Length: 111
DNA sequence: CGCTTTTGACCAGCGC
DNA sequence: GCGCTGGTCAAAAGCG
Image (tube, rainbow, N blue to C red; front, side, top):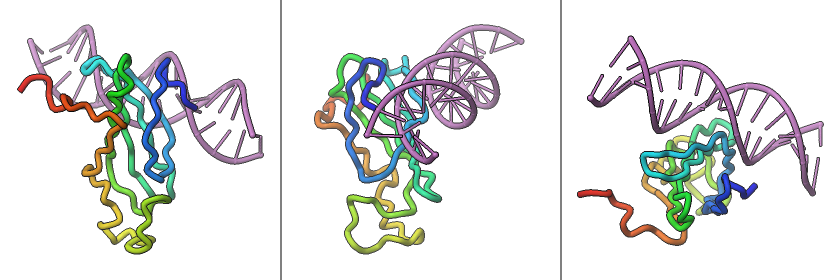
């Protein structure tokens, strides 16, 4: 399960269940992009991971959507088991988790 | 047996 | 109008 077109990228576990449903090479950024979907019941959260083909350290993970169920890891023990708790979905595109080497020059190419 | 992963193809939108 | 890219789906195979 760890062979991405010749890349050995290890995605940061968030405690959720993801199923890879596609992978493509984005020429716009010259990087690989993998698409994951949450396999939880009633959960339509999606995860997108992209990393440079030659620099595995440029791993970048982007969470799309929110989870309507708690996580198997970050379970504070409260505010969960309820879809009406926005606090449980702190992944609202706010938790862009990076790999172990966050590219300081990730910002934009030109600015 | 169940589950997961992998690849190809298709579609849509946009730019010029 | 055409070409191109991005995104998703489907099917198949392998493993424990």
